[in-house]
Amino acid sequence: MKDAVTPPPIVRQLAELRAMTAGWHLAQESVGVVPTMGALHDGHLSLVAAAKKLCDRVIVTIFVNPKQFNNPEDLANYPRTEAEDAKKLARFGIDAVYVPEPDQIYPNGFSTTVSVAGLTDVMDGVHRPGHFDGVATVVTKLFTQSTATDAFFGEKDFQQLQVVKRLARDLDLQITVHGCPTIRDIDGLALSSRNLLLSDRARTKACRLFEEMEKIAEGLNAGEAFEDLHAAAVKALETAGFTKVEYLDLRAADDLTELAAPTREARLFAAAWLAGVRLIDNIAV
Ligand code: PAF
Image (tube, rainbow, N blue to C red):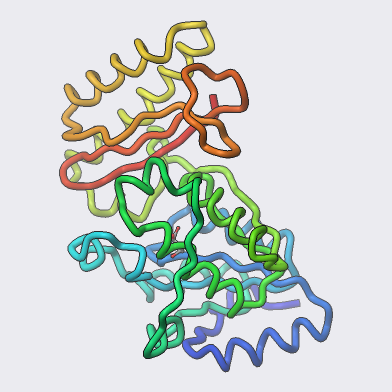
């Protein structure tokens, strides 16, 4: 039995990771991977806990993937907190933290892009051009490099979760992709590394996004028209200080088709800007 407070080894080279995982596969152990970009919060840690529960071995990856940032300023500002992240992971007794050097992911001359059509034509795919190609490419690399049998992603990024499930299926990757529920702060704000970028003042307003989404969900349950609920929510968010509501969409949970009413398993998706920070969220309706 592993000592749960021993900090996990930090692995920066693919060859070292491969040497570790080869032994695990020989012993027929299951291997869980939790891909992250660091700045770990309780949402990430819930994925680590889920992986620990299901898998014999667990790898957390930390890589701020330049290919998925459509805005260089956003990439430069993205929080990087490796030492704190390693401390937060210590209590889980995981087997490795893979923090690859950039050339381990994108060696000189790297020229392959994984692109998932359809699911990426809407929402973040439209508002963040190239984002999902970057995500799909890096996730494919992290899956093949980690040789994991299971992978864990948060439902907070629901569109990303669907894209990753699709690429794993389409490319016959031998990995099961698990979606885990969004973790929220006490006021309802979905946990996100980007919340660190909110000023104290903006932070107090940020929960309005979830509140307005809940109002829409309640209205839909009461038989009200989505169009009216949508208009009221956008107005309320703008009045609260959100500068731009990029989308507030009702969509089918499986293929993300736009819906006018929740006639099949549906989710409400939102992206909105508050004080220079882009917040996204989604809930089942
Ligand atoms: O959700 C994230 O943090 C990233 O998009 C991921 C999946 C780690 C790929 O870089």
